[in-house]
Length: 212
Image (cartoon, rainbow, N blue to C red):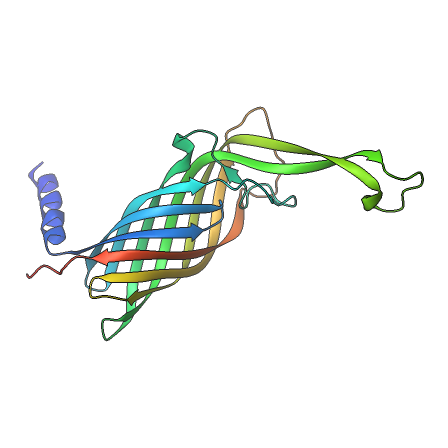
């Protein structure tokens, strides 16, 4: 039992000497768009970020060729919220102004998906020759909840505009795994994953580094 108590104590001691950063990012990922808030712990070249994200619903222009990619739509307040985990490894630091990392990002979402379908309603001309010769009705569909786990890797940059304030950018690609929990709607799919990409912009604050 004493050994199990030693491990948390060692971890707490490491945190005492860690450098803390608070970072907020606007992310475009496989589920759609979200705003995240992270607390970063920096250990030498490794940086661990733990936080939450808030999904931002998209009201229109839903793709019709895919079901899961960028179609997540929160129907309750709890569905807006998810978790965000980031790992960064520093590649180089240019005069404490420009810092480059490789990163891994993991985001968890439990939400519905929403997409639009258009059905032909009536002919506009007596002898229609194209799809433009019909009137259509738009039908909105909501299915879920859906569980989604996104995994992205890529390049991240920190650009310091002041001593403790920096801009954050991430560019990456990855895979989103999903599971449909809606027993009333079965969507046929060959796989339960889809390739995704990640684009992120944010701002952060670095606390003064503790002296060991």
